Amino acid sequence: MKIACIGTGFVGVVTSAVFASHGHEVIGLDIDENKIKSLSEGKVPFFEPGLNELLKKTLNEGHLTFTNSYKNAITDAEMIFIMVGTPSAADGQADLKYVFSTAESMAPYLKENAIVVIKSTVPPGTNEQIEKIIKQKTKTTFTTASVPEFLREGSAVEDTLHPSRVVIGTTDKKTGEKISQLHQPLSNKIIIMKPESAQMAKYASNTYLATRITFINQIADLCEKNGADVEEVAAGIGEDPRIGTHYWYPGFGYGGSCFPKDVSELAAYSRAVGESNNLMNKVHQLNLARAPYLMKKLDQKVGGWKNKQVAVLGLSFKPNTDDTREAPSIAIIEYLQQHGAQILGFDPKAKWVGKTTNFSQKNSLEEAVINADAIIAIIEWPEIISFDFCKTRLSKPQFFIDGRNQFDPTTIKNCGYTYLGIGRE
Ligand code: UDX
Picture 1: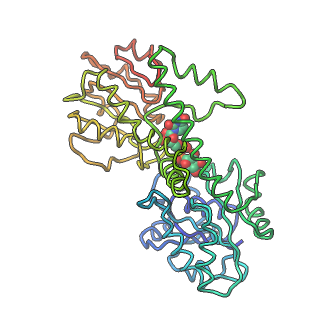
Picture 2 (picture 1 turned 45 degrees about the vertical axis):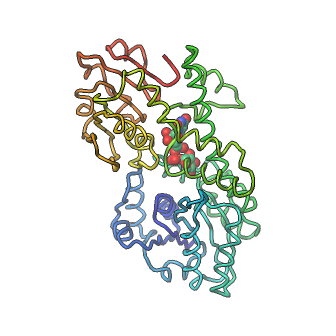
Picture 3 (picture 1 turned 135 degrees about the horizontal axis):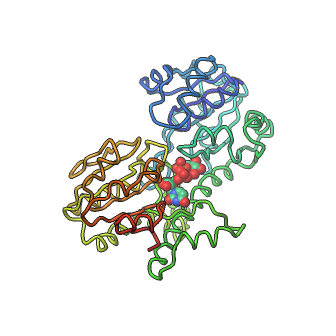
């Protein structure tokens, strides 16, 4: 199948490479010339396991090309995927300006019976809006659909090659069949529904997971009041098949390019439709308050952050990515800066891009902890959780803050640290 993929951000590059790896003829389009140049040379501008290899392979096989010309990308395309950004607007709802300008730019070149698929995260009602925009520019017959993306950063290639399900939002039978055909080699769980339902499914899925994390964070806070261990509690509830064991890791709050944005957009959307007193609004606020709340609590336990040397380990929002968008490290470092600490950061891939007051990023974990009064292990990078912190223990008192409960409290205490976990000890 001839496919055009518009937008070469995270979802765009992964999707283009995966379809191309299945033998489809894919053209990736972006208005950013530098991105096109670098992708055409086989260079991915961000870190994602397995993606560089897949990109190079599909480029070499000739199944994938990149362009910044709408004419080149759209003229022969049977299916066009819109995968441009939908940042939050001032009122908190998704800003659809890039989706709309993409629709407008592709319209003059659309082939007869082309299918325009929205993969960007958009609110219900967007399909009608783009159909209207396209119809103003062309008399060609086309259909639209919404196929939301559920991939996770850090395992994006794997998630796209083997998605847990493919949700196809369309009211046109033929369109549904064609999109199903394309996805059949990837998944046997294909669910066809109305576009509005597909769009709500995406928002609801991310908001549900974010709510679970917020819930276990709050249970952790209660455990700290009564001597319970949240890890034991999570095990005790997770074995209930109605509940499950996933997304039960408490910490400094969820981050990334999706959860914070999608929850706050659903919250703004609910306010706009007159449903302001709901869970979505509360979850977003609780997550924003999470890191400052923990830092304040820890402040008392460590005897104040002022003039303390603090090693902050894990700057990305999760392991296996260099993405720092909405990462908990941001709120933690800003808190430490405001409270006069000296901060030494370390991450296997991510670079600190915030203010550098009292902050320096180290190339190795050893350098970050060299004189630390407190160590905050935020993210469960394998390099961090497998590190032998006993080896670097100093003779002065040291706090070990296990922000993801990845360490055995007894081992850490036996090395001489004061161990502080989340919802335990
Ligand atoms: C998420 C969704 O999982 C994915 O389906 C969607 O397409 C995009 O958003 P991603 O942002 O890559 O994917 O990361 P994910 O692994 O889901 O983690 C999101 C955040 O939640 C991270 O900050 C992570 O550390 C945090 N998290 C996750 C927790 O705090 N506790 C958990 O138990 C799980």
